[in-house]
Image (cartoon, rainbow, N blue to C red; front, side, top):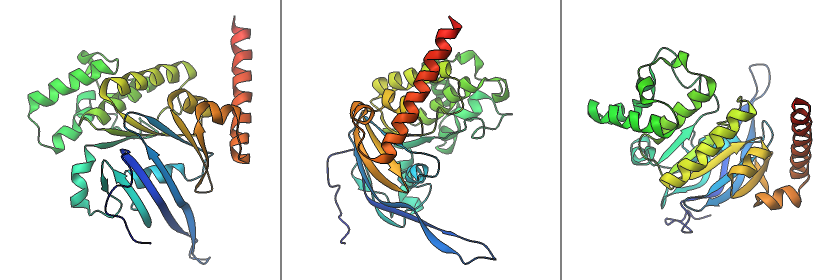
Length: 278
């Protein structure tokens, strides 16, 4: 198929026929290609949130890595703000790094525990050789915006709680004023109360900065709270899309029905725990 040279829609993110394959095997077994992502397509309107939902191994995180060009797709198109970045060289990708940022699953592993909050969050500005005073002012402003005291900027990461590290990860992602933020299981590992706080913060930041989110999650409850649209991923393919309400109340695909059933079981358990605690 001929590769289009213009973005096919006015969406800020448009993914077309995305494919990614890996070779699996060992020195004892023949290595065979496996389709981790197979012919995936989706679009996101500026200022909106799309959630990719699926069980572990479904391919949703591989999609995120291809969209951010952490990994190069084998084929397909990834249109970001009007440009297909799927086949760009590392040098040509540089202007897009500031527009497209990613928050990873484990905030602790993505930060050196011996670094200070300032050293961790200002790193993108250091790469761009910004002045020290500008870096410090930007760190202070973003720490305050994500609910952390600027007085803590010289405190080491090891002295922050898990929820506070997630807030620092968000501050770092926003340092270069991106248009698009990819959240790869960014709230996993947190207790329900902290998850709710970070989810509300994400919504506040989205409104304040007109952010577009691509949310990767196995948690349907979280996805339906944050996302305008949900896409269910199974075996490297999107098998169903719809609004949060449609997915919860009218699941069509068998995989979606399983996710909804698990979600209802979780909600029932949570209600029981809360009732017992009263």
